[in-house]
Amino acid sequence: MTPSIDPSLNRRKLRIALRKAREAAGLRQREAAERVEWSLSKLIRIETGAVSISVSDLRALMEVYGITDRAVTDELEEAARGSKGPSWWSSFHDVLTPQFAQYLGYETAAVRLHTYHPIVIPGHLQTREYANALLAPRDLDPERMRRVVELRMMRQGRMFDGEERLSSVFVLDEAAVRRQIGGPTVLAGQLQQLLDLGARPDTTIRVLPFEAGAHYSTLGSFVLLGFTDDKDLLYLEHAAGSMTGGEDLELLERYQRCFGQITDLALDESGSLDLISRVKRDLGMG
Image 1 (cartoon, one colour):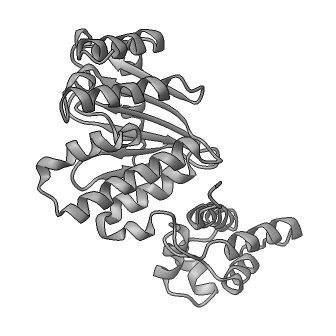
Image 2: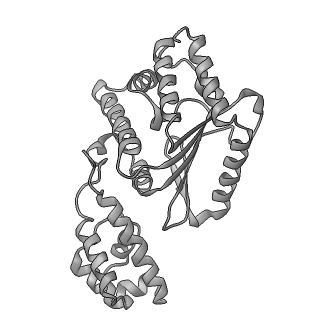
Image 3: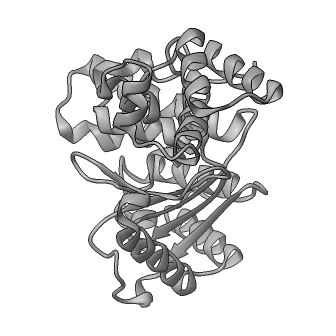
């Protein structure tokens, strides 16, 4: 069954359109909020996509911003009606940090994903068995661990089998490919999944070999998301997680250059899948 349009996508559409309209009208956030007699925090929450907006509130903003084109107003009103309700990940609120929940909203809207992982296979690509083995040492409550894994599987299904698929490039360090999370059988199943996903036209898997040496991101993994309607976004994966976009262009550009460097150092697609196949054979699993 094809998933319906997530409310977060409509909130994002409104966020971008209303921010651009406000800027085109030459208004600061505080000025716009005063014009419609709102608190500044309410306008900020709408412009960050944190909350939905009612059609009546939307019409008030469109009047202030001078949006009168019927096709545009109809489109935005439809988005406002579709902005209500929970996002696909909302039922996992008990195992999600606010930062990662916000990131998932961006990932759901992205058209391009580039990521590097130096230690383990990333959650996007993990088998259920690999994810369970990876989480086991954390001594999580069994039900919490089950839900974390289920979130990863649902995210993976939406990414690879959903209606709107990401164009994705995964660069995995050779250490991640060889580390025996869960033992030989679990790793062999995980490597086979990499081979299967790497054969898809919308997914590229590259391996950064040990011989590549040092590079800028040897200390951690990161994700770069690309959009058709907004600036790229950087997500640094650590305990708290952090995102940056247009507010820190220097850092964003640094990691974009880093990804380019890593990609240049990595094996090509064919060589990467050959290495993964060799590692799988060395496990005695074919």
